[in-house]
Picture (tube, rainbow, N blue to C red):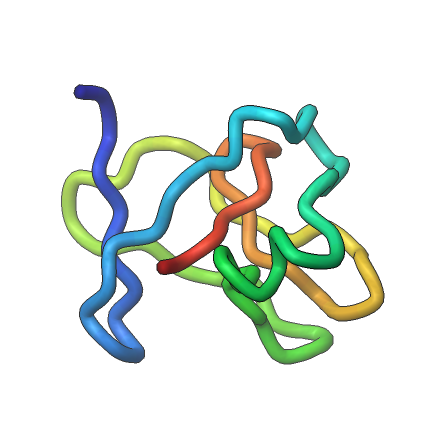
Length: 76
């Protein structure tokens, strides 16, 4: 299954959107309604708990979106 990440803010699992490419979110319009991006406050970097070995960061969209190893993260 791969790495499973859970947002500490609400306990929801977050997912990588397979139509994205590293550093670019292609989830727009209806996709955002169904799979809202994991928003991160401007100027902050997401942090991972024990066992998260990949690099967490952000990409810039119309908002600031969390990412894991360069891939945009979405939440259900």
